[in-house]
Length: 151
Image (tube, rainbow, N blue to C red):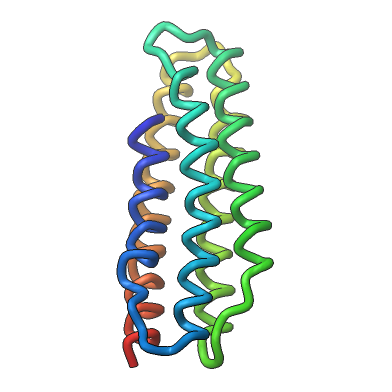
């Protein structure tokens, strides 16, 4: 679970680190994204203490639900950000990709409720694949945003 959270955080941090534009709108945009990221990092840090190798299925489901909620709050925060001119489409794409991370968690939570160990392993694999795919998409979007911000 920590790796999954780390993937998203690392990608969001990349935007904050790269946003060194000379334009005040760009700086304001990067600060707003950084604020959303900081909120997500804080919520994920609190949740990580609940992740243990011996947790029950019910505990895992509760933890996944909390991760979903943290992602949902971040999506709401990102929707409140006003991107600079020319970045609206990329910003929407970024939000959609972060939301896809939450959707993958939701789907995994639903699939991990069974008793069949093979089905649970398969669901875990699908979640890892979804997180990896989302990470690639987020990375590409972040690169596109950085290119626009740097002019």
